[in-house]
Amino acid sequence: MEIEKAVSALSALSQESRLTVFRYLVQAGLEGVPAGRIGAHLGLPLSTLSFHLSQLKHAGLVKCRREGRTLYYSAHYAAMNELMGYLTENCCQGISEKRKVSSRPRKVRALKK
Amino acid sequence: MEIEKAVSALSALSQESRLTVFRYLVQAGLEGVPAGRIGAHLGLPLSTLSFHLSQLKHAGLVKCRREGRTLYYSAHYAAMNELMGYLTENCCQGISEKRKVSSRPRKVRALKK
DNA sequence: TCCATATTTCCAATAATATAGAAATATAAA
DNA sequence: TTTATATTTCTATATTATTGGAAATATGGA
Image (cartoon, rainbow over all chains, first blue to last red; front, side, top):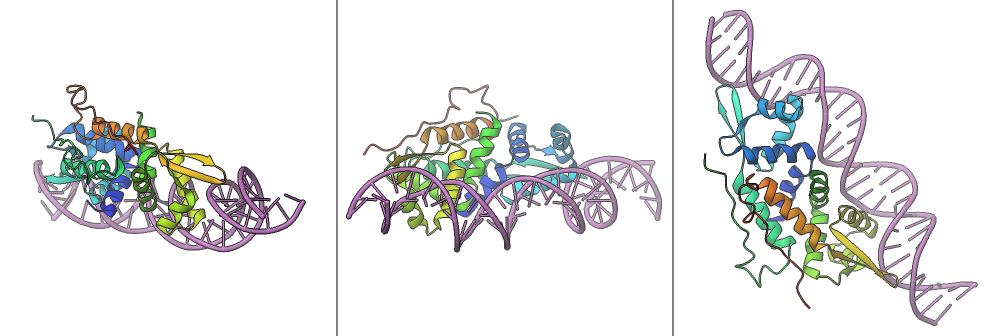
């Protein structure tokens, strides 16, 4: 991962509403949550929420899929893993060259239903 | 770690100059690097650098110590570990309750000289 | 076709952040 | 005590982000 992508992911997560949305989506699992339900959960006006979701989407941290008139948003686990990997490699020891194996971050994934 | 602190750390890292500074300090180790040397390394005006260093310090991600007229800045490894822990617990699976042991993030530290 | 639902886009106001020169502060050394 | 060095704080400006109401878009059903 290159630094611009890391900055973009970090920016997306560096705002309380968005971090809360992302945490919620991570918990919610692969099937995702309709935008309206997220808004109700957080008590945010839908236009504000939509703005935040688009920031997260732009950063690649969430995906969405339409089902009828409903848009289901879900966490993009692989993207979060990439970010964690970048931080581990670049911001935790600076010894990734010397300890390549042990510095590979633990993989994480969604829970099976 | 509570969400406000996580947001503050993420905000500090969500800007390219600051992320670069932090990466550099992580590599540089516990003894730290004089502000002037950081500025030379990044090609930033010192007043701009000073602004960014104060953001990082405010977020708790760097420390500094004076030696004569020189201020040595260094990465605060424990704070970064805390942030990684928060992200692992809250943004990677949402199953921290069920898998408490394995979800504890790997500890990282500075290299011995 | 017309209406209801889910959500986004548009817009304007406000707030927060970033930048860098100039002045100020802290320390050391002559 | 004067001068030089290291760094910060001040200040103004420019840029970017956040907010939420209103209008627009997309879809499905009567």
